[in-house]
Amino acid sequence: MAGVKQQKRPNRDVAAVNGRPAEAKPSANGAAAETTTASNASQPAAVPTAVSRSFAGGRRLTRRRLHEQLARAAASCQNRSLVQRIKRLARVLTNKPFDEQRRRQGGVLLEGCLDAVAETADLADRCVACEAIAWGLAWLVRNKQADATAGGLLQRLVQAASTTIDGEPLEREGAAPFVLTLAGLFADVEDCRAIGVAVRDHVEQDIAATVGEMGGIRATTADEMLGKLCNWLRCQESLAATGAAPFSKPTLKAIDRAVEAAVRLLGRAGRPVTDVAPLPPGMVEPLLRAARRGRRKLAATVTALTEGRDLAGTRRWNEKGLLAGSFLDQQSSVAVLRSGWTRDAVRVLVTYQSDVPRLEIAAGSRLVVAGPWEQAVDRNGTAVPLASDWRASRWEANDEAVYFEMVADLADGLRLERAVLVLAADNVVLLGDAVVLPTAGYGDQPAELKQPLCLRSTLTLPQTIGVEAFDETTEVFGCDLKPRFLALPLGLSEWRQRTDRDSLVAADQRLTLSQTSPVSRLYAPLWLDLDARRLRRLRQQPEETQRTWRQLTVADTRERLTSDQAVGYRVQAGLDQWLVYRTLDESRNRTILGCNLSCEFFAGRFGTDGEAVRSMEVFDEHDAG
Image 1 (cartoon, rainbow, N blue to C red):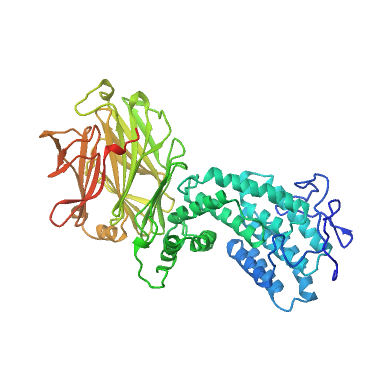
Image 2: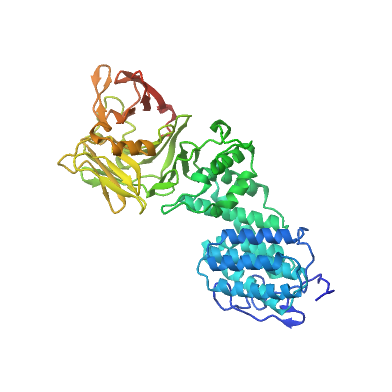
C-alpha cells in the first residue's frame, strides 16, 4: 500500500480495499452483518484505500493522541477481558518501532477485540471497545495498512453503529460517542458520514429538550443524570479529538450549565453515590475533566471535592470561594440541596416530574434513602387524589439552611405541601408534609375542614440499609455496619401507643409515617439526623437521656391554638436542641416557647443562653398559590 494516494471521492458502490471486496462479518452485538447502511440499503460501506495523516477537521493523528484515546477507553470499560485487550492493543500500536510485524499483529488484535465485543452483553462496554477499535483501525490506515482485513473491520464497525442507532433510545444514546468517533475518523466514507450527521442532530435535540435553565437534567435519578451528561461530554470530546466541528453554541451553553449543576450530585472524592458502594471515579471522569476546565469557582469546587485542597495547592479551602451547594431548576423539575462540600456533607435530590416524586438522600459516600417518595391522603375513609401536577412553591437558601417546598392541589379545594429542609451545620434533613385549605384563614371553620384526615408518607430505603425499631419509643435507626440516620416522627408521641393509626413502620425496605387529624388539616414532619458523630454518641450512651422531642404550645393573642392551626416542636439529641414551627392557617404574630414569630415556617437551634437562633424562616409572600 506504500505510495497509494487518497481517493478524492470514496467508492460508493463496493467496499473494496486493494481491489478485493470486503467480506461481511458479524456485528458488535452478535447479529449477522447486513449490507444495509444509513445511506444505502443495498450496498456495503465503502472504505478508502488510504487516509491522510490528518482527520477531516485537520487534526493530526499522532502516537501520543492514539495512546491517550486507548488509555481513556480502557479506564472507562468495566469488562476485564476487554480492558486487557485494549491495553495490549495500545502497547502494540503505540510502542516503537511500528514495523511490519507490529502492523500485522495490530490487525490481528483489532479483529480479536471486535470478536470479543460481539460476545459482550453490556452496551456501554461494547461501545467503548468499538471506539477503541476505531482509533486503532485509523492508526493502521494512517500507516497505509488498509488491506482486506482493515476494510472488513471498518465494515463491521459501520454495521454495528447502524444497528445500534436503529435500536432502542437508550442504545442510541449510549452509542453516540462511538458513532461520532467513527464518523470523524472516517469522514470520507459516505456511510460513516451519514450516521454521524444523524447521531449528532439527535444528541443536540436531546440536550435542548433535557437541560433546564439552571442546568438540571430531566431524569429521575442521580445515576441517570450523571450518565446522560457524561455521555454528552464524551460526544463533545469525540468531536474535538477527531477534528470535527463542535456542537452549536446553544448546545455548548446547555452542557456548561449541566456540568455546573451535576457537580452537586457527586459524593466523597468526586464519586457518584449508589445504594451498593461508591463507583470508581472513572465513571464520571468526563464530568470531572469538563469541570476542571470550567470557570474558577467550578474548578475550585471540583478540586476541593476530589483532592481536599484549593487551586493554590494548600489543604485548607474556604467554601466561600466555591459554588453554592444547592439549586432549583423548575423547568426540569429538579431540586438539589447540599449541606456543604465536606467529606460528610448531606445531599438531597428531589425530582417531581410525575404524580409520585422521587427522593434521594446521601450522607457522605452512603445513600440512605433512594426511591419513590409516596404519599396517600384519606379523608373520612375515602382516598383524596391529586388534582394537579407538582410545582415548586418556595425556595430559600442561606449559609445555615436550605428550604424547598412543592405543592399539588387535592380534591375539594385542599392542597398538599411537601417540604425539605437541610440544616447545613447539623447535617439534619426535615421532611414535612402538610395538608391545608388555602381559602381558610385564622378562625375560619368551613365545612371542608370538619372531616377527619389521614396522611401517609413513604420513603424507599436502599437494600443495604436495615431499620432498627424500639419496643417502647417510636423513633427508628437506619443502619448498615454503622448507624446512618435517626428518624424522629415529630408529630407522633415519643412513646408508642396501643393504637396503630399514628405510627412509623418499616417493612420491605419502606419507611412509612402515618398520622391522623380530627379535621382536614395537619402537618406531619419527619426529622432525619444524619450526623455520623452524633449518631455514634446516641447509640453508645443511655438512650432515655440522649434523644427526645416534644410538641409545644402555640399561642395567638393569648389563646392556645389547636394542632390543625399551628404546631411547634422541640427536638433534642444529646446536648443539641432545635425548634421547629409551622402554621397551617395563616401567618400571624404568634408565641412559642417565648419566641414571637410571624412567619409560616421557622427552624432554629437553641444557643447557650437558651434562646432560639434562626436557621431558616419562610414567609408567605413567596407563596405561588
